[in-house]
Length: 163
Image (cartoon, rainbow, N blue to C red; front, side, top):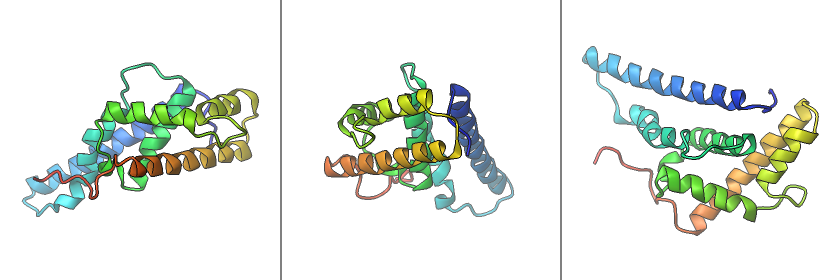
């Protein structure tokens, strides 16, 4: 673990995501060039990226706490392979994420954004504090996903990019 103390950290994660997308895209292109059968399911990460990459380029400037929340959300959605279940457009999903944030106050009686700002500014850079941040972001992610499900903003099945 390393502590999320500046924008450079979220940029590193964004670069890793972009690199992974390029790798998948190049693999598919090479397989096609070699006349190999390409399973459409092998392309889902790339196809999902057309959606989530728009989220990594928000229309407004985010502070470091907001960047953390957003990048963690995208990474967790990729890891859980559920980014393709959201009904909303990327900018709408970002708005929904940040509109939900003040409603969820499980962190020392603070909402997730205020808690992240507190942790980033007032607590030392230790593995324990980094783990606290990650655990808090994971809990927030689960609560947000449940919020989306309850409010019928998730598809029943993953997006079908092949129709």
